[in-house]
Image (cartoon, rainbow, N blue to C red):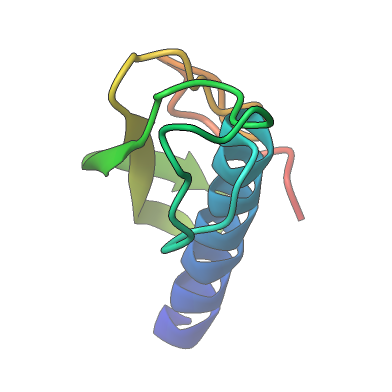
Length: 88
């Protein structure tokens, strides 16, 4: 059961990282030049915040990635939502 929780947590983490990557316009660890015309903004990753989510497997701890400007809002588990019972 714990391995299923860890797997679910890893999948959520991967999806949220991909969402943030899409929002920022560059991959993790990729450097954006200050003079780059294609740079979407000077918004960068800024650590994580912890969240406990209730699932069919029990409670799962996830790390929500953050951005400096606070523009990123996870779509898979929305802000202030702690219930993911419908996900499989």
